Image (cartoon, rainbow, N blue to C red; front, side, top):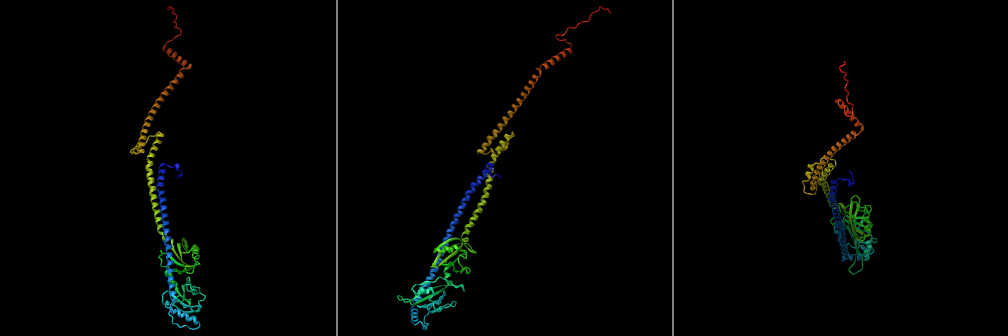
Length: 436
């Protein structure tokens, strides 16, 4: 097919024009609609993930605040204060086990520890699955802060051996208005912190993690990611973003083995961040399916439009083709298809009127051509007669012809016995008087 539009037939031009006029606006409108829908979905997706991260961070924060309140209540109980005073007064004596820590009976508690002012463990109780604290905790950061009068929450700690994480909350032990005499610490199980972390509603395939300042995953339902860094999981951009801000969102982060994710993060405590990951496909799947359906329908409509354009273009160009064929036949001195012209001349539009005018013109041309041919024939006869007469005149006007003509006349006279003009008279023979 020649791609030069200047060489196309009228039907091809009309068909292409109709297809372009129908499909191009439809394609542009479809593309903008799908793109606008995708952007709207992405915006809603980011808002949803950001809300989930905030909800997770707030839930963990509230849970740890509740544990801090319990540690503070334990550290200000009169019997605990008296118990720690007796230990501080006589650190080498065995303190009477008269204090009931009570917190060890809570399902989320792993270990409860009372430490004297010098860091020695005055008392410790634990759940059946944990070991009580023994010896000294003077080198622990939570003890240093608490004994200085600052309640503290230790970032989740991961036991590399068991893979179990826990969180320690410490509060100063003292009577209201008095100096610090020790520290009350409550260590809660990581599973309970994780339960708080996962209170936010997530889309299918979504995950909530607690990540430390180094990007290491401290808590997650998926045990395969616990203890690994975000870099190791292919989430380096997310780790960079967390190091630069306390909250934010990212799109298109590629989680190893899970595909593209939308991520949001929110700081729980200094050095601990709640991270929410949700698959992009969950959110973009519906709009992608809608886009695929739209393009499929566009293709079907496009095919129907092409077929309709071809049929319509042929119907529009057929009268022009008939007129063109008639003009070619006139040019070639051939008879015009009057029936075809009569068919297209039945319409009341411009083409029909043109066909009728063309038919009359063809008839007039045929009549004129017939007259011209008759005139040419007559002229040809006259010219032939004139040429013959001229040829005769040229022959009879020569001296040779005249001489021949004279001799012929003489011969005819002689044949008739006529001497003709200028001949000698006949002489009678002499009469001898009958001498014989």
